[in-house]
Image 1: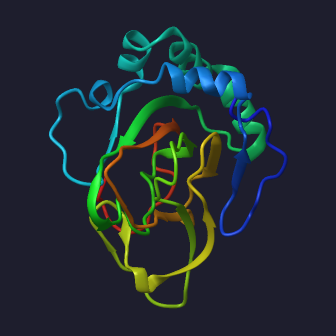
Image 2: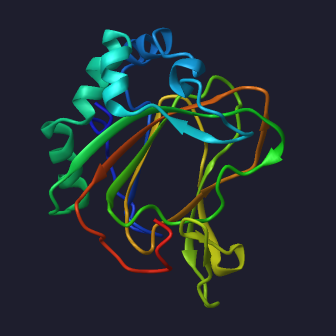
Image 3: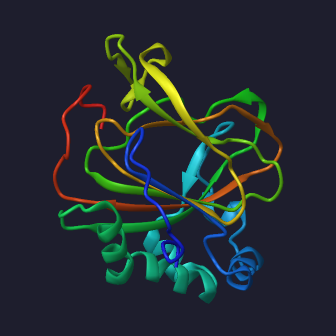
Length: 218
């Protein structure tokens, strides 16, 4: 599904693909029509403004509409993993996740996350965008500059350590996927919105750290 229309893999600043109109319109519209409400994703968990919250894969499969169940099961299945393997060339054993998520409303302009690296046990990370309108929160891809690397929190990186290379708009039916490496610096632009920002997190984990950089934030 989400990788069916991939046409090119970009290498700078790190391996990634961007697929607009990733799904057939009819199927995408079915996903929108049957999508879980924010409360079904949050499940009474406390949250602050502009916070990312995902629904775990197992709960999504057992609790959501059959359209979503089929979508999620495909993206944790062997066929999808092998397509990702063909695009990115990784060899690790994969433990896949597919998690509907939201970013919560933000009454003031703020970033959900600035420049950062993902968990070193992630092999690939994918973000399927389901924008309702101009919800804001574009994806930014960075590269290291010549200043010393500085980390804090969960592999958050100081703004002064990176250089912006590419901005990918948060648009409906758009899929972004990248290989997770010590160069895979990314973040989200500031947003101010009374709405929930919709997305699906598609991740492939492995059983060992793939790189050692920064500190033990994870």
